[in-house]
Structures are given as C-alpha cells and as structure tokens.
Length: 324
Image 1 (cartoon, rainbow, N blue to C red):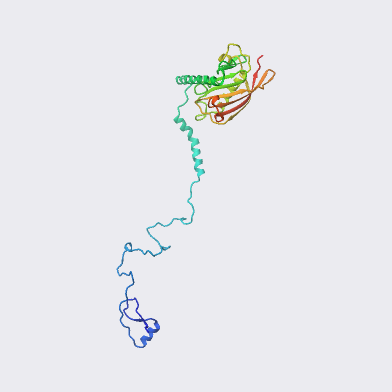
Image 2 (image 1 turned 45 degrees about the vertical axis):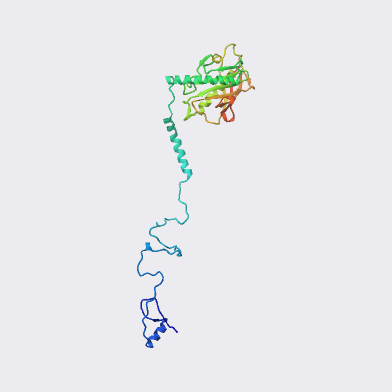
C-alpha cells in the first residue's frame, strides 16, 4: 500500500499522506527519501510575462467586479435609469414668442422705408401711380359687374360733402388723403337697387402692426363708404349730373349702429374691394329713412370672389334725410 504522496512543492522529499502516518514513520525510524522534482503544471512559466503580451483565455467569463483603471468611473445615477434633466419645451417656446413680439417691430422698421410725407414730391409721384392703377380697376369692375350704359349706376369720389349747407372735408379726403392713408376711393352705386362696389387703397401709414392695417382705421373707412351709399340711394338725382358733382348735393347718412367682424388681416399698400347693398326694407319716420347696409371687404374683384376671399364683414344701420 502506498502511504506516500509526491507533492508539487519544492521540498524534494517523500512525505506521508497524513500527519498520523507521518508521525508513525518518525517513531519507527524511517527517513524521508529524496524525490524528484514534480513536473510543472501546464502553461506554467518560471519567467514573468508582461500582461500586455499574455494571451487571453477564450473560456474565461468576465467578472462583474473587474476594475480597469483606463475606464472612467460611472457618474452618479448612471445605472439608476433616470433621464437627464432638460429644459421644458413650452418654456423655450414662451421665451421665443416673447422675444419675437418685442423685437419684431424694430426689425420690420429697419427693413422697411418710412411712409412718404404728405405733400412731398415722392408723395405726389406715388399718388399719381395709385390713381392710375385704381382707375383701371374701376373700369374693369364696371365692365364685369354693372352695365356701363345703365343710368342707375353712378361713380362717387371722396369729395367734400355739405352738412346744413356748409361744405366740410370728409375724413377720406382730409387727414387720410395722402399716399400713406387712403389715397384712392371710388364708389360704384346703383341708386335704385342700393347695390354698391367700392375700390379702395390702404396705405402703409394706417398700420396697427407692421404691414397690417389698423382695425379702427378699417372700420372708419367702411363706415364712410356705407354712409355715402345709404345717403345717396333712392334719391331723385338731377339730370345730367353724375360722379363728383352729384356728391355735393347730398349729405352722407349718419350711423346709428355698426358691427364689424374681422376674418383675416388686411395688409397695407394694396387695393381692396368693398361689395355690399342697402336693404330694400327701409322705414321712414318723421322725414328720416332708416337703412340697413351690409358689406364685405374682398381681396379680389367681386366677380372672381369666393368664400376664402372675404376679409371683413360688416353691417350697420344708417339714418338719412328723405328728399322732399
């Protein structure tokens, strides 16, 4: 029976397997015999090999506790699954809208030229060009909308109206007569049916916002146009007098009720068309006729207009004196 083991140590002697056998061998007087050096294990080397030159074991599983000094330490919350904090999108949108509303006016002023001064040479040149273009539009509207030979249709210009036999300048021919205001205004009116169509030009001096017409100025323009139509309809006009001369014979009607609805914004420095009619059912009380007038502002000619071309709608009640 073999009671001895040849270890892989460097003692070079035969050693009993257990301490008990080793003690019995010493008491019996046995001496340890020399043993050959144990063979080295596989892949064992007495020389040290740098870690960079060692071949990795393909069967070795990576350790979860392995630390590599070349890799950065994970930051706080890297493995917690928490998303990084970001600025809320609505906050960025609010800041952008605020900056745009504050500085947009100054940016537009830098990129656009100021309106021409009333009475200057530049203003006269612009007025001449606007009147030329407006007359062409009036002729085209008259050709497509009304019968040129019909005596019921008259052309009204923004001239002075008389109030109690005193001539005063209307608002459309006074403060707004420059190229920056309302330089062009012509009204085609049927004195029998009450239908009317006006061609107006809104200048760049009546802006409530850059390049957008002021809402109050738009209402004033429409109110003046509708008042002239309500004051001239169903009057006995003298024979042979038309256009600008006719307007001096009658007072424009006075507004009693006026409602306006803005559907789209009106841009300045362009022509618009006001199309409407005076209601047939008018009441006469103590020499005063009450007319209901409705109208709409179009960005194209009435014969080409659709629902999408309606910019503003309005309705008002006007009081006009009855011709005796």
